[in-house]
Length: 218
Image (tube, rainbow, N blue to C red; front, side, top):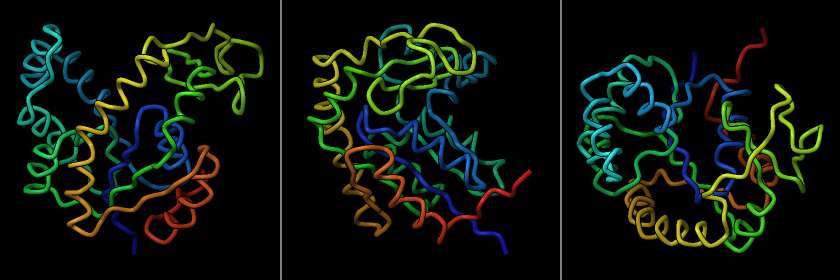
């Protein structure tokens, strides 16, 4: 019998959440839902939710909690199997509204020392079209400053400026600690600590194997 596992993945900017999410979807039978991708898809398809969301984004405002919850629920309602939500919920209100309609089995929280995150992003570069992330220290591209797949140039994201990142980490703390506390009261918060994505993955993968179905080899 297949295992149904509905999970959230959380972690501060620069914690390796994208890398870990990619590994989870590579090895396990689950659907990865990134909030950013969901919003972009709705905006591109000109859905009512997408049109509404774009009006807020254009003004530089946050999309209201109700709209975000509707957007996510619309995406997950047709998923019959396991899913991994990434980037949502961001606020306690969103977490509460989601819980009313869709129960979550586990929250995977990545814990990385902030001083390490700030040091790490100084060496982080991305291939923007695909979202592939490289680190010149421990995950360098095969050719200097070029994407492994396309050969296109890598760039440094504006958000990876150390000063900007430090501010983002403070915002993350203010928003996310109440969310984590909410899930802690539900008894589903699971924390995985490490200095690198590889350290965290070494602890997370065996735990996931107990809860999720491995992806069948093609």
